[in-house]
Length: 175
Length: 188
Image (cartoon, rainbow over all chains, first blue to last red; front, top):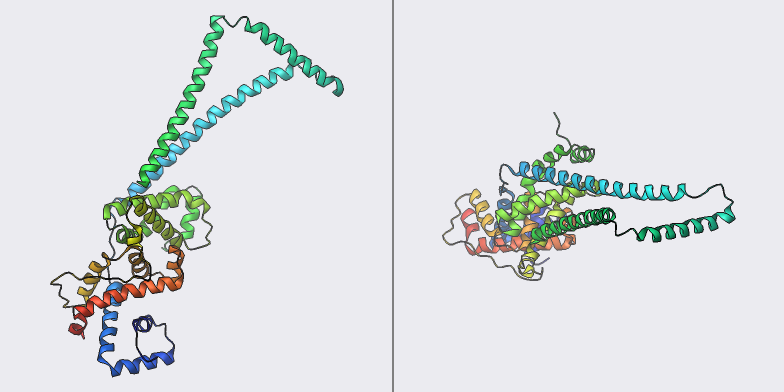
């Protein structure tokens, strides 16, 4: 070690040098005023940085963050309730349809003939629906079908809109 | 009465005591804020980003497994969010994220006089604002948050050696300004 470079002086300040090297550094420092100046300057920087006071956030910072968290949690909860309610309605409809189909199948029939029986039942239903199609011009049926379709469209549009809004907010945050 | 540890607060929040999260906010807001201000060079923007960081941390708290200290994990969020913000604003990250091989050139304000030790703090405070983001981050984490080089390397995704190089480069740049202005001689 012939020269005291800045790296060694930095390590000297941080106490990262071996005791034998510290001794050499001390000797070199005593012999050169230039080294002393550099060390003093680095020590000034180190001390100056240690004594820097931090910058503080605005006084209501915590309140604002907590309010944001609460509002997000509430919205999340509402979204979950909405999705649960729609899902439960759809499941209920499916269960009713399944129950109705099953109630019309004779479960006591033997396994081999049961499949034939199920096929026959479905064929009967197709014939039944075919007959019913003739009544489709009935205004009441059109009204009911239209209401269900509109309901479905409204729900889909709402979910799409919410999703779009959320994506937009996320994008704005990034910007 | 002893203050609850970070882990105790996190467990309480996980159990559903949402309001306990404010304890963590109070504990870390003024620690992370200087880091963001130094990186983004704008206090209003820094406060907004810090709010987002706390929201992100809250949403991810259930996945926090204590593999690192909460502070390290949180500073990682803060640092990465600030980088994303800088990137999104289409600032030249390269200019803020100088390669460690690049030289730092800082200049002091004219007519700055160092009469006492406390003036040095104000002096270096002004110089920090001229530092590129990466350098300012290391200085903030090391001196303001009292983090070790190892912890800083965990936050910034750099090797410990690189962190030390950045720290030394920043100090040397400050030292050069001090020597140039002969402040050291005044205080010798």
